[in-house]
Length: 386
Image 1 (tube, rainbow, N blue to C red):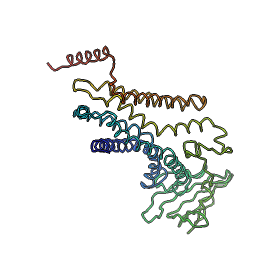
Image 2 (spheres, rainbow, N blue to C red; image 1 turned 135 degrees about the horizontal axis):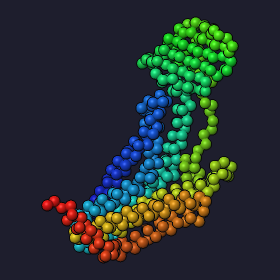
Image 3 (spheres, rainbow, N blue to C red; image 1 turned 180 degrees about the vertical axis):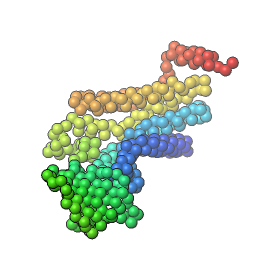
């Protein structure tokens, strides 16, 4: 790789990383706020919250990476054109194909990244997210320790804790058990603590009273205690085998599904559509770069507007991605439609390479350019400062 190609590769890849990190962080924050209840209602720490929500980052990168690459390539090409570097390279006899190879190198790196994420890391993150959320939400202890709130840990059982001190001591405990229709039990205690050992999880209460109100009796029976253990294991969710959705399957599990898999038996079309969507994912970065360079890579003078070329590149990318999305959605029930995404890719990739190889300049018809110029001039005169 020559010095010019190395410069283009470094500039484009740096812009790609900057856009990718920025967009991923922005979207991650918006998605993470949806699970803020892990800290508020489930009593988890900020580290647990960040760890759980951070597992969706590979999936976000999978979606954002091709778009970030398009933005980076368009930015670099626009910068080279604005600084007249493309014109100088062309005047020096440098073929547009040589300039394109530097961008294609970045696209190959991004394509490999997308392929690895699509095949393993995105499903792995979703699996860990499901396992972790199941564990957190099934943890009755995290549900109980919510000072200042009346929390229903099961139908008919309500608990309230006034305060939790730094040493873990619970203060002002109220427990109401109405599961038995013939008897209502209310427990009040000054202090208590959670005890978790091999025998189970217990709420050990100290210095309190138990009030039992039996059906048909007007006065309750009250028992004062110094120490009382309340079994919490009965409220914990039983451990069940986690069933992973189609998006949580690794690529090889989609290619060679288990014939006895219940999801595969019920939704074979969804398996097939998801497989082809995963196979297409690494091809989009390659196609996006080809489309961007076909529209923006040709040398132009400063008088030649690049606005239409930018619109054309965005429109071509949007059309290709929309074709892939529609092919995946409708291909679940109509298998032949899955081929549309490959046909679209072949047309975009092959047509773009032809334009780049021949050094063609894609421009809109003259009447459209003249109409836009006249419209722009009309608005400029209308809003011009007198």
